[in-house]
Length: 120
Image (cartoon, rainbow, N blue to C red; front, side, top):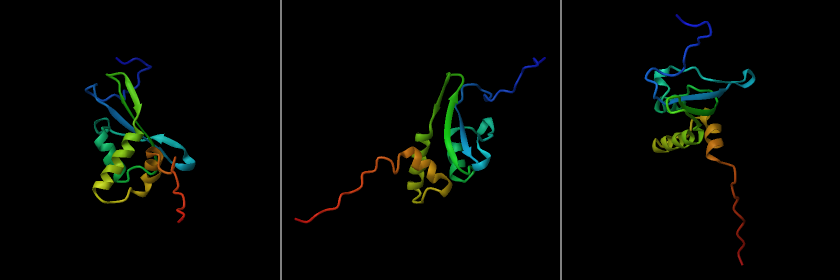
C-alpha cells in the first residue's frame, strides 16, 4: 500500500540512466520544463526534437542521473552539437534555436571588431 505522501518518480525504470530535460520559454506564459517520456529523455532524442522544432524557444538543457548522484547544465554541449549537425548537413540553425545556440556558443559576445586598415 502506498503512503499518502507518495509521488510518482521521474526516474526511469532501470535507474542508471541519464535523463535530459529542456526548459522552454513561453513568453508571457513564463518558462517551464517540457513534459517528456522517461524512455525518450536521452540526449539523442532531445537533439532530434530540438532540430525538428519540438521546442518553441529553448532556454536550457539539464542532464541528471540519480543513480550516480549528479546533475549538470549541458546547454553549451547541446548548442555545439546542434551547430555541428547543422554544419554537417550544410543547413542553417533553425530559427527557434538561433538564440539558444548564440547564447551558449558565446556568439556576439567578446567579438573583436576588425580595425580599419590604413595604407601608408
